[in-house]
Image 1: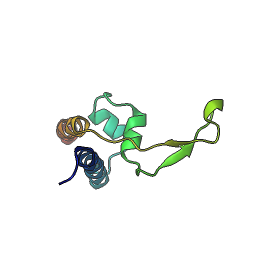
Image 2: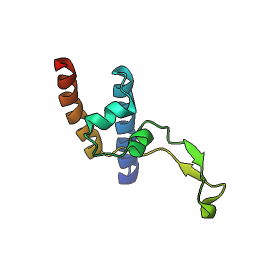
Image 3: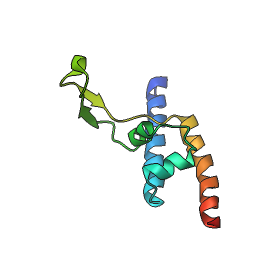
Image 4: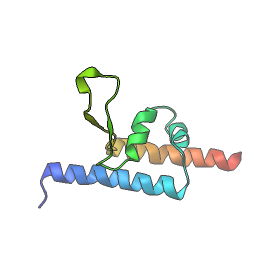
Length: 98
């Protein structure tokens, strides 16, 4: 039986995987996702949801972190994934009406 931490991580990874599948299948841009969520998530967070867990960038503009690697991946919680799915339904209906 998996421990709670592993189970939680698997759920979070699963949310990110399903999110990536949906945005790929529907060809959604980050701006589209921002509109689906009605601005409740930052564009930086939205970008992180689509990144791999290994994605990093070099820290710049912060002397204390010079040459450090900053993670770009953002885990998508169950609540965030649910909000995305609920918003997606309404957004798709609006797109059909346009």
